[in-house]
Image (cartoon, rainbow, N blue to C red; front, top):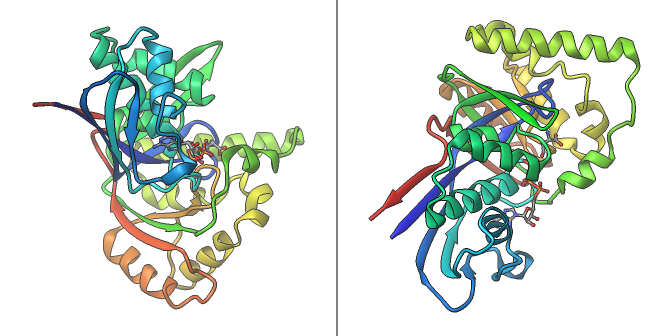
Length: 291
Ligand SMILES: Nc1ncnc2c1ncn2[C@@H]1O[C@H](COP(=O)(O)OP(=O)(O)OP(=O)(O)O)[C@@H](O)[C@H]1O
Ligand SMILES: N[C@@H](CCO)C(=O)O
């Protein structure tokens, strides 16, 4: 039996808009049950997510391998939909890897990254979903350039609000243009963040995660939990909180003990009625098992 697992991912890390992402240890798993007369995928998401070839996993697989024979599939995933934890990227990566395995195309992960980025529009979720860890990537002139950085020995405190926020809706909140001065400041902050992440200089990196100029200030009104969690964390001397992907999830990077204490405080906040997770980084990315 073929089994594929793909980690959730958190994009942007503040100023790394559309280009930095980190994989966390929360996995979508996809199993191939058997060949079938038609495509069918069993999953726990109800009618919101299709069970036939309109499903994003199957649509993606057929985009890569249009003549693929139909199969009965089973998907399980604790990754919430449209919450900023890369659910659409996990589906795209699972679909591409499924097609690659079943068709025997033998494409490399770099090749799959190029296809996945074209489908998703930016590489910040799909790159760490494929490679694991912390990845900095860009998509220019139809080419993806991706660099995996040394694995951070960090944990993620993840607050998932109860309400969905579709990426498309969250991108609608962004301005069409940025003043030149703000763009230069944003770029200098992002450059320094990447240098700090690459050298594992957390004292520099963690405050810069909170210094984004590109998107958070425009999206903050959609995600009141961002200000609440930053305030509680700052009162405890903890920095490193940002809007995960397009939101509404809010993520704080840090060490396990510190984040455990943070979560105890967050549980006392009456407005934070969503789910809390405390997870390690996923180092591996997509995994394929054959038995
Ligand atoms: N496992 C899945 N199987 C099929 N479709 C999925 C799956 N996961 C996500 N999707 C589709 O992707 C949509 C969510 O994509 P969207 O880009 O808005 O959010 P996200 O990927 O969870 O967040 P972000 O990109 O900000 O991290 C869902 O509404 C659903 O249509
Ligand atoms: N970089 C993307 C991530 C969600 O796909 C955004 O913030 O809109």
